[in-house]
Length: 134
Image (cartoon, rainbow, N blue to C red; front, side, top):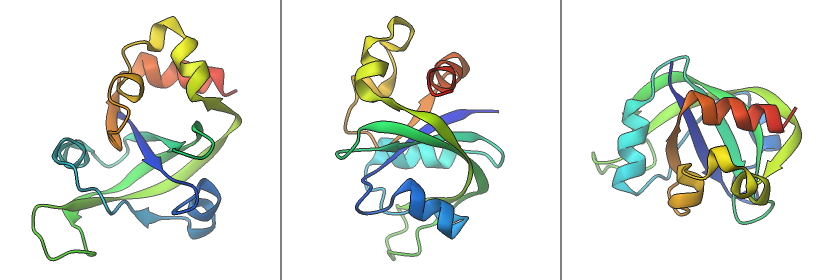
């Protein structure tokens, strides 16, 4: 299994809306590195859901329920989506400040590549953030 983090601005698509929907395709990715990460996602992989810009915190866990396919919001074949479903909310959202302050997370892409919207995580990073949020 692989582990990931995806970012969404809550005013565009919030964790609450995601839970109401029960499933969504992760569209709008227009960065090649993020697109390549979507292509690496496998069904069953776990994904941390991060509110960017407002809140700046990890709020929940999702899972990949369908592997990549053509982004239905564009006819450009360069862009893909995956389907995600919510798994659980974190008891305590984990803030960017908490992540930056945690020594074991200093190399996480969220800190090193702040603008990347879809990024891989090591299992230890994923587990640490879950621990911080419990």
